Length: 388
Image (cartoon, rainbow, N blue to C red; front, side, top):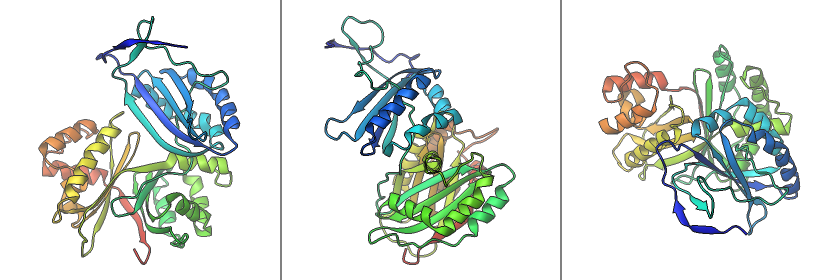
């Protein structure tokens, strides 16, 4: 049995940029051995990825369906380069048929660690029982799991890119279909779907009362939606086959853009609201910081009953950050509210995390207006159920 010495915490050095990735999974009933077999085939591939250091696979002692995967990487840049690559998505495809849910994927910078007795330098990885894989192709699979916002509405988004030059045709396809039935069952219904584009990137935001997974499965089965998706397929940058469950599952997993934060004004609002979305040009590795700044702004803004922001949702995955807001005024009338910038200090902090381009500045009204014009997403369609 491995014993530990008195804790010898190694202080985080300036040159230590290691990253710890934690992935929580639920494995389908009866699929545990298949999951292990698939993982055994993958672990050598992942171990050869540049920047990969070590990993562990753990199973819950309370619920055998619950698994925890951790991995260590040299730095976040090498991890992000791999996890966002087509090679990664191909590598993890065999896992999709085993996993029923991905609860959470988290990333942390390593600050301190306790060394094993008798060892020097970094801690020796804990031994994994024979036959269990050691590596983690950390990816998002399975149906999304989302909590409702303060108003009881579950918000989620999907994002994907289309071939350059096809944007006009894609907008036509996505705006012309018949809306599916809003009622899913006694407890779940579709509340609203808003679709935006910026360049060749598409973002589809949905609002659901009830169970998000049930709502998305309901939508995917509707003939009018299937027809639209089939018409859209030739224009996608990354091909998919919706008739193949594994391919469809992989597409919707990598397209998921969860609502990292939701803020809603407490008092009801009369009159027309202006829905607006911004796609932020995040510098590599800065996605979480950008999302946190925007979330802090929305919490403060929606607490003001006379302020311009009624709802604010920050959709975030890696370095893709989209903020969707409902404003009491047009976005152009209050670019700071539309962008989530509270003041000069917040503007400077956000500006350091974004690629503003030559002369870009969020500290002036003119700079905010220019940035808003450049990064605002164009609305394609916005549909609400009759009783929303």
